[in-house]
Image 1 (tube, rainbow, N blue to C red):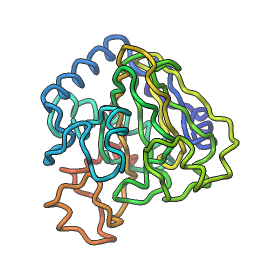
Image 2: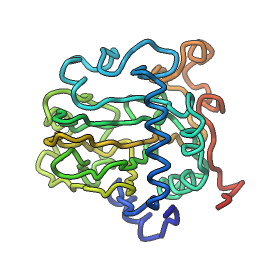
Image 3: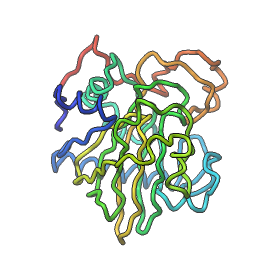
Image 4: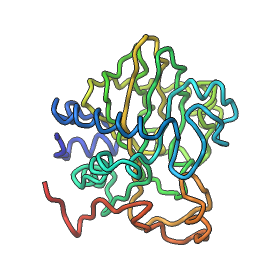
Length: 277
């Protein structure tokens, strides 16, 4: 695993709100990730998230146009909670340290993982933000996106609006039909040239949860598979949004309560403890 972060990479991320790391996984590691993720996906039987009956492609109460959104990507969340092989991948403190160093924080918790698969001929993923969906509000929150297949211009690689995270807020149009909906909220970026991020399988990117990003359509008969994980800096508190929190846990929370439940959001790295490579 290419997990050593340089100061140059930190500077680039802090300037642009994203970074691509080529050859993050070795060929052997990539094959292990693929097998683990696909096993976890098969075990789910289409169930989108533990504890909920919603299936992939069904209405999740977030996106208004279920038919369109269901053809953007297949999304399965918190695979780490239902498969031990994926859990081992997601709680890797080396990745936690990478996220912490890029974000400039002391500690990192998993918010949620998610497999994101674009099926053949899938719709594009409209420009959007991530953090406004989540149950905490932190401008340093970020995600890793690991390419399990080559992510290309043809099959739906990522695009980023560089530097946008400095000016975006928690207003978010979600992922709908109109690629330009986000620019009604943030018109200052409507004429900004995006950075395209094709990746070979085994490469990864990190991006800030307030960086405007999206992905193209899949114009091929093959899949574009990615495994991702969203990270919450240690010390965050509940903002009132349910998002992925289980109902029983949600009932114990009030706005302002610390989100430090290790069963739901494990602490995978803290600078005070260090990291074992």
